[in-house]
Amino acid sequence: MTQTMTAVEIGQAGGPEVLVPVQRPRPLPGPGQVLVRVAAAGVNRPDCLQRQGLYPAPPGASDIPGLEVAGEVVALGTGAASSLLGQTVCALVTGGGYAQYCLAETPLCLPLPKGLSVTEAAGLPETLFTVWHNVHERGGLEPGQCFLVHGGTSGIGTTAIQFAKALGAVVIATARGSDKAQACLKLGADHAIDSTAQDFVEEVARITGKKGVNVILDMVGGDYIARNLKCLATEGRLVNIAYQAGSVAEINFLPVMLKRLTVTGSTLRIQSLADKSRMALGLLETVWPWIEAGKLRPVIHATFPLEKACDAHRLMESCAHTGKIVLVNEIAE
Image 1: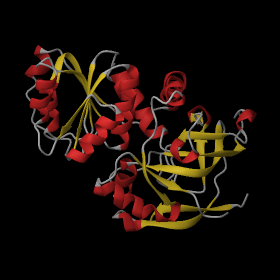
Image 2: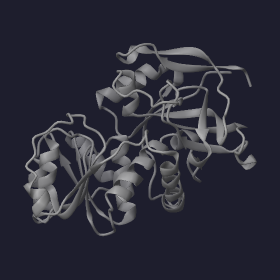
Image 3: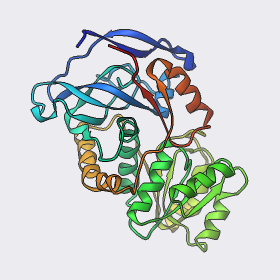
Image 4: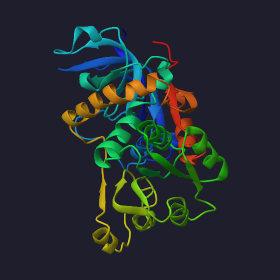
């Protein structure tokens, strides 16, 4: 291996054009870490926020963007299992994915699911860890319950639809435009609401016979927060994972008391290694068999060479995609 690598760094806070390919020293794995030769890396909205200067890397994390990778383990830190060397894995990372090599914590490296390409596997970790934690652990969605996800054609949305259906829930998805609503139905959603033409509060009431839904996964925020509370059934749970329309809202909390609602949320990147390791075990035991049985599969909308990360971000911010955007490492060592 060479001592340097190509990586994409954020030259300064700004638009997609500030993503610049550079040469960096190849990182060395520390205790409990492995070095992954990155074949592919997922692109996620937090990467765009980091590029804009709105979501800085946590202390100790790489300043290089990229929160999920797939590739071959080529070096081990002390304490890392020797059996990992040479294995192809996908991994959740706190940064550094937009590069030829990336460090990953051993417990967050998961085997390539049977039947998936390395490019598809690169689109799994960030979305699956997020959905598992927020829909299963925080939201407590159970078989037979009703689940509403906003942004059904996003990377998170396409994963959440399939996850909830594999679990045995009734799924309602919102999406912007009739074509995207149809895409949600094709992924398995029982009902799809075109949020540009329909009021999702009225539609949820109609679909559920005014009973409401048990769990909502929302990444919109803003005025959706109060409207979500109207959609929840008694003992319902609202889980927020992003605030694309803003994190400030005026809310009447009386329904929270009367319907005994739970309002919660989380962000994944800053959680402890112990917590993420627990999530990884849950995914391996429950979701990996679903993937290998064909019940859940990453939806890859487009791939870009690593050095064209700026174009990947432009597509992400256009919201024209359905599913995941992935960087493929085509740069020779």
